Length: 232
Image (tube, rainbow, N blue to C red):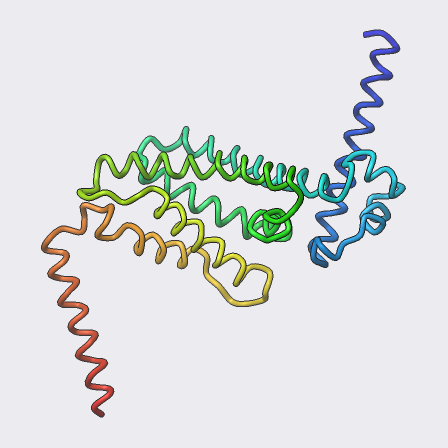
């Protein structure tokens, strides 16, 4: 390797290090305040660079937002690929993907809320397109698993968009309502309840006619207890 090549490589490494420092500074600030209220001057100061350097790497604040969104989805996509390799059963694969998604939202909520919040959804055209592209890619993986299950286990037809909106709508609503709010919450319990709501009696052969009868008896018992309390 020539001296010129070494110098170019060194410059590239320094640029990447600066870029990462800016991203890390932005993520740190986002844990303290909302992205909309954050200032590039504050981000630059936290990163130890001039404010102009932020614009040199990201063009503008929306460019910085797109880089953060790319980072969130990169982790999600990587994890999904590993889950796909680990689970040949579509039902187990879908459950593992849903578990990972909610875990990722909780683990990096200050960053992940950009994905489920309004800053990206109503950002500039480039940001909206980037978010749409990412969303289509990863939600399609969930839909593919759902359709694999449908072919094996569903007697009737449930539209994939209905399943998609129910799954992601519930998870993202739970995340916004609970993560980083100080509220006590149980993500695992929520996911189990969501799973039962979406799949029990719809996608599970475990819900046979006998189970239906048993469930109706159980509901009747609950209603009887409720009526007894009201009469007391």
